[in-house]
Image (cartoon, rainbow, N blue to C red):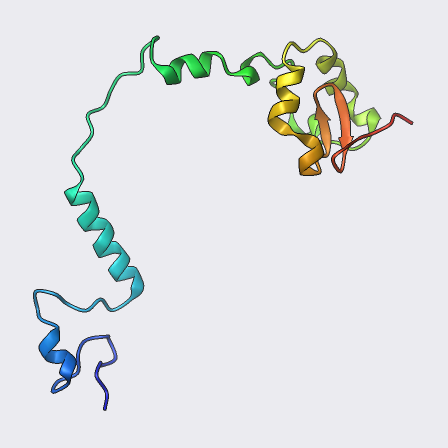
Length: 134
């Protein structure tokens, strides 16, 4: 005996017909159910007041202290940083030589753990290992 029709509603005369009601319709798809739950959650959530981001705000301080803002390679195209040959890496390596955030760059990228290819922390990396110049 079929308990649901083609669109997911309780079939007439089935045990589910008495359980489902017009006040609580059965969702036709999982996406419909997810949308209904998300809509109910959004309606129950109070609206947050927008707060201005000022000088003393933690996010503003974090952005001002972001090490990437001070990186010497900032502005270089990715094709000059993510390379595997020393000749191609020369412009990025020259900038890294005088970079004030080389240590922070190595801590953030962790090239030895990520099989990194390119210039990081003043060195050329290939598959997560320092590439020896040829």
